[in-house]
Image (tube, rainbow, N blue to C red; front, side, top):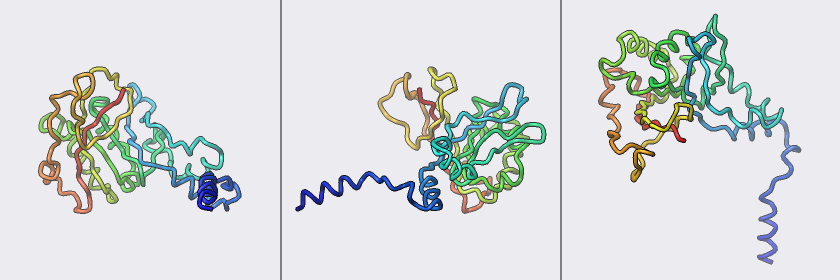
Length: 225
């Protein structure tokens, strides 16, 4: 009898009645498939057509019509202006907005120059290349603009400082990934051995006087091949 029960349970692992569930429940299930993304903001040449991102879209947006209907409203087109259309799909509850100085030297200045107050207020997770925060490496107006923008991020939960590890093989087109620890035993074809330890963000940026509810973290940024 035990073996029969096991066979029955094994067969039950495949659920075939999804389409018979109420639509509202199916929508909830589709939304459970969503996960956070690192949405790196880039600009087209001369910034004539606005910002864009190469971040992979959630699978639910293109599986079928129903899955798209279930999640599309959670990914509105964002980060445009009067002259430049919104082109980036972004989930304010899940996604991490990231700007990398190695890809866009003045990207932060441009981005915060056009972000709407409503978009800033909805941001919960933001990541910035640590070079933007370095002494003397970025002009004062950019730093001032960043601080003003962060004050407008009234729902910000986490600010991530990214130590971008240069990869000589990378052409900059690969997706960025974040790591809290540098993998050991790699050579220059993988992780450079000379990478410094992550900064103490709580100490280094205490003067920014962020809300106590905002978590400050530091990570390594790496573009895989």
